[in-house]
Length: 145
Image 1 (tube, rainbow, N blue to C red):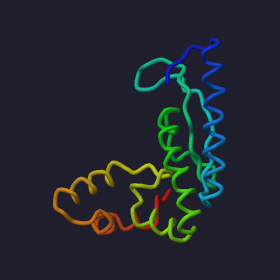
Image 2 (image 1 turned 45 degrees about the horizontal axis):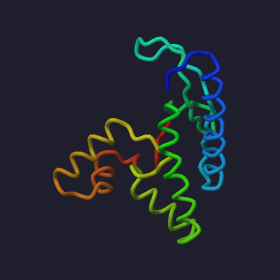
Image 3 (image 1 turned 120 degrees about the vertical axis):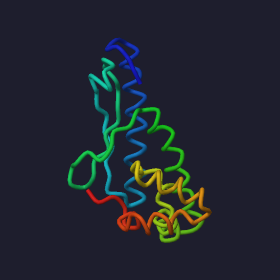
């Protein structure tokens, strides 16, 4: 999301801060050891900014991925859905479902290799979980960083 440092940037910042607060709250509710924070990026792929971004850090404080504010907002709906599902089906059931279909976890950013494995699995008619575990044993336990 590109913006100058004028009044519209300040409005974007205020709006994005609310989305980050929601993501952090939902992450805590779901037991995710992730923290989202806003950041300003000056340069992305040769395009000068500033760009407002969202950094996601793990429990060790390492940045595991960087999203646009729009991407965070699209993932927020999935996060809200997971919390609602916990209320209906229970925490353990939802956690198990997210682990078995990690590509559907709104808190996870799949790697290009996992994405390629998913495409290959669909084209061969195999279950995506079976394909990922076969090619990427760490996929069943989440990212190893």
